[in-house]
Image (cartoon, rainbow, N blue to C red; front, side, top):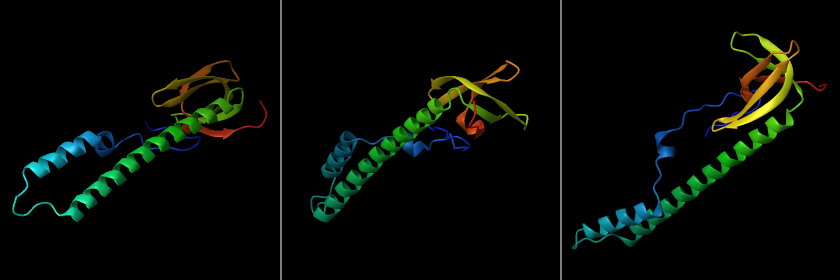
Length: 140
């Protein structure tokens, strides 16, 4: 899940490699298949076996680190959005201009927090993303 930050535009595409997961069971199946079909006159070298194990362990640790980083970014976006409740913000809109209003509500979707901003004329902008916030004003 890609999560936005205030004033930033993050890519929402995820690579196919990140979506496909190779678990320990898959590695063991692959390794047993390799052992089953190896040449009996030239068995797998111990160094090659240890290198494969080290690569798999490194891959698994990298995957866990990526998941933890995604969770941290998501929590940061949640914290940022909660901090905006009741604050006056300047929001860039699709027509190229900007609107000033007060954050009145937050909804959480699978793509991150979505804000509702009440303008001074009483109309409410919905589906405002954190990346659309240009400025957070001190006074409410």
